[in-house]
Length: 230
Image (tube, rainbow, N blue to C red; front, side, top):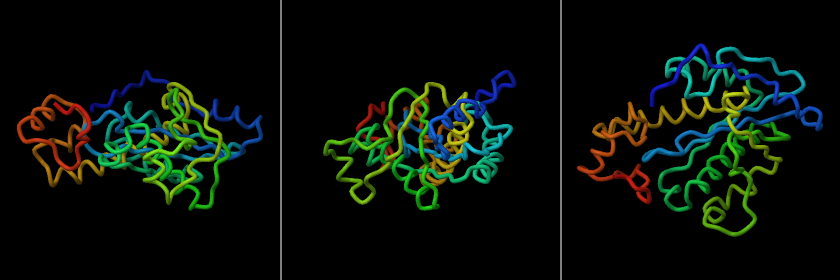
């Protein structure tokens, strides 16, 4: 999908994140997802942890949809170096079919959370883009719980949601860059085995040409077969 570049877009800041210092929090994890609406490939969750006591800003970072692929690639190692800890978790198309997109988001987010914990950092609070907390573990038994039995309990920090956090909050914008770069690399690798579907360009999203190939050649093992593909 083309990036909506623009010098007129306002740069995200740490202003909102710093309001959490008054609640006694130090480490905040900005979280964002990519691939939620794609027909093929994983859904991916990025996580960028910042230190509210002394984090500096990082210039050039925007919501990943607003910057070019080349700029995202340039920024990705800078975001990792800037973050106190960072990670990207993925959930496969088969997992999306098995547990639904919300369960798969939680699964990918849990994997990202566990990577951060493995680095030795435990975030005190999470800032999640959007209006729905899909990251915190659900209390009732579900297919997701069975599938991720080895990964529970998942994120046990308080999760705060904010609409358009990826455009306003630097930690979340940074997470979006990490997730987008990682997922795009996966789709380019898959394109080598399935070139007819154009995943190097459409990254698994529902373009007319992508749907046309699905209609004529059928879905692959990397498609979300429970979705309306054509």
